[in-house]
Length: 444
Ligand SMILES: [Zn+2]
Image (tube, rainbow, N blue to C red; front, side, top):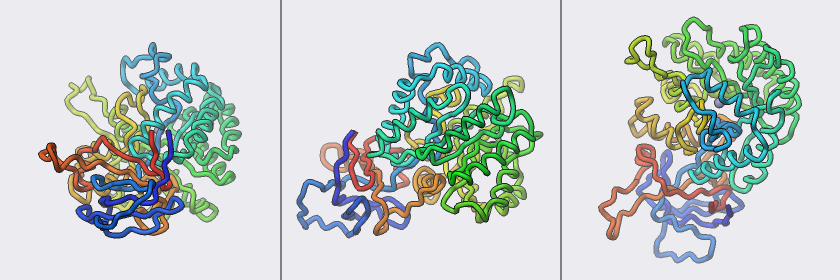
């Protein structure tokens, strides 16, 4: 992987809010930032090695994984774990298979699988990601050490924000206290930016709340972002814990660093709320740095299994309607990959744009405005959710872009359908892309 400095992106069509992609622009870069954006002038002959000819490209804000598990990716692709096959495809089995795999994790295979994920992501146009690595009595700091190595290795091509993550209970069970002590140590690392826990795995409501109380207190103490895997069920008889998490956020807001975000992932239980409750919760979260992160490929696989006892004909989708939450209720949110290539989510790729595309049908979001919003949920909105505010295509903003090949519209292949707008890109994501990170072209 190499970096090539770019001073000028020439003749590109900007595909983002307010820009007309039928007009070409010359984007001048300096020190990794946008210096000027002028109308493209074909007759002006710029010369120099650091010019990127983008006359056949749409340029858009780079992509972001708001939520991706680095340590347990691609277990189904690694021969080392070939015996851990999916038989039932339910949540309990996914937990068991992953626990067995975790017991065999070694730094080498963690780094190797992590590298697959990061390299594929960068090739897709990702420049920022929140990467979860588990810390507990089984793996101790193995996953974290591998993530730190990967963070250093890829620092020239991608911002990797490490979330030290307790997938297992920290307030119940035989190993709760050990897990909590290990998390307390891990969070002290300067390489870690986020504290993440899974309150729903605790054995009682009391322990679930203790998990969240501890996480808020510890994140504040160490000035980290906070991230919960929350309410991952579709059980109307189980009280949603999101209310408690949002209540804690409100109680702590005066001493909370405003640059740190609070991300709530999954929250599938909330899909059972009625309209009045959605409005009430929106009121509760208003003004707080709370972001809901929908994980549609995982949610649909883990929580959308047809009920065979009921004939299997009816099938819930059970994933947060993120675009609807943003448009109708004014929530802040993003969508993300979560897992790829493991028992929690066997399918999918490292391309966040594929989620935006699936979202057209999944969320019934087919208008031009919907496409903009779906793209935002995997780019600018996702960065905001992980605490990286971005104002793309403004002077002085970071030059982090993905360039999409528009397809041949002239010559012998002129009959080929070209991609002309951001809507085209969301409907049918182009495979050919270029990634620009901090003003440099990343050559993979
Ligand atoms: Zn997750």
